[in-house]
Image 1 (cartoon, rainbow, N blue to C red):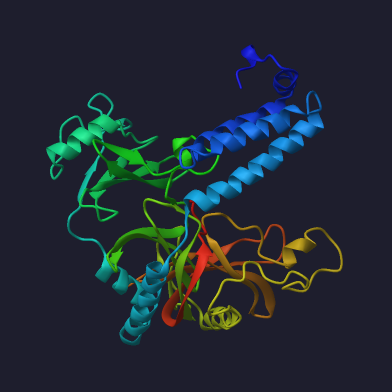
Image 2 (cartoon, rainbow, N blue to C red; image 1 turned 180 degrees about the vertical axis):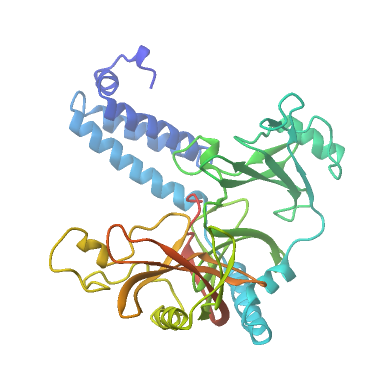
Length: 430
């Protein structure tokens, strides 16, 4: 609403109240988004405006009318544009389940990776990136000024006409036919550095002479809200693979934790609600290497037999299939002193950090003394050479306890694989 032109009692009341003006702004944004896909909405909106105007200067009445209308528009938006998985999508997820199950009989460590690699789109794509600014190459990048290798003159004309630019950082671009119409669409990977360390993945459909951004989320006109997904580099174990199955292209978004890989099959040019999901569960064989590397000095040290035995026994209390965060805090892990400060430090190792996953806290008995232990990992991060990347932290149960850490080895094997239709977890809301 343009408050400089407010004339009626209702308009003046809305402009005089910040809350109402905010609701009116949301209404305007939501209406403009929805009327693009439902032109007939104009008639219903005019009827609602008449109902709204009956509130006159009653702020409470206006607030209620706006909130009720926003709920109606939200529902209509969901029904109109949010993609619902169909029979083909469900068949694809079942195909994946069966293929992963079969692959697991041959290689129980990496069945998901093998199947994703076999389905990856490896032909018909072109990749290019922003280029460094000649005057400030360390910090500034810009869209290429000359046609990159592999881009056709027709695609270059559409790219330049669309004026697609990354929001921050250095963006990379992939031309790929996402909808099977014979024209290559566009995927933009926009990396945000600093403390964010996120990559926002956006998709654009080729439409005539331009590339058109994937439909925005409800009640949003900001480009930052249009990402298909985001990948978190701040410790989270996430990735995306572009796969083709049953004639369709999917953004296979992987979000992993200790003991489980969740794979979400996203329709790349749609707004996704609940999507076909494949979950692969693992069980670990955990061990403490007798030879450890000192993190401070870099020297290699050999654990004493009693210490190695105590740490190995402590690992026995760790769940082999799932993380338990800090677990049950109703009882102390080590006996608490009869008096004194810091009693709470006896119940868990302490607060965690966003960059790692807490697998579990446990008591560790060494030479008759009780220590607080914590096994942590980087959200199930796993590779061929090292297996599970994990550590066992150890400290005395007092506020000033010195911390020690020990490498934990973990080799996994798949236990089962399941399919479901679930909301996407771990990205920016999709």
